[in-house]
Image (cartoon, rainbow, N blue to C red; front, top):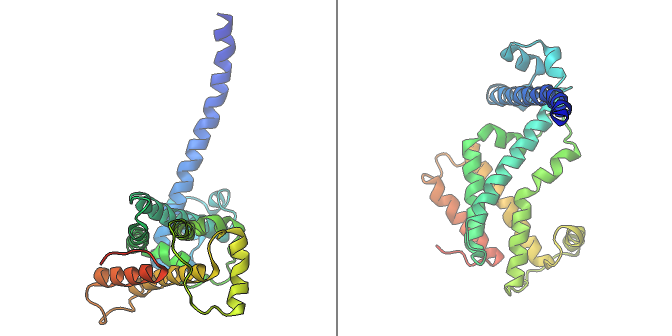
Length: 244
């Protein structure tokens, strides 16, 4: 009986804190969802905490308790977007057999494109024009590298599988630029192979951006087929055995 009496107050004290945490998480989600809708109409540069608060029926001071500034809200949206596109790419890549390097590469590319087409305004936020006056904090670095980390692992797996370093001429300045990455994120990947991987990585996002921002209109009819062709060519350029 004594044990029950002592346990009850502890349960009573913890419940309000849990309820507050749930309410805060829910309102944080609503604020970010509303802000994403504003991205579609106003763009990132036009994002306003006051406008978000107005749409939620809140006073602006209440929103400021969750996001002290517009930049804090932008950072949260950017981190969410990087994490979402990264998670999509990771799930797609994980669905392929580990030995199927070409299939894993194509799965990553298609997942990036699919997420971008489903979330064009969020993709534009992270891979479009910089937002005037906004400087991304270090909080965005790790989420931003999730897709790149998949490619680096593919390159390591290719080396382990016996892929030789290509014989491309590599200027000394480029080799020097790549060396810090080789010493940190890309250990075990030869410089010329890493250079090819970086070209493919930037070309992937360039191809997605070209399609998403309308640069292929009246140029390509079957965007999906053209995208697959480009990515397969890039995969073979790296040295992955891509079919088709």
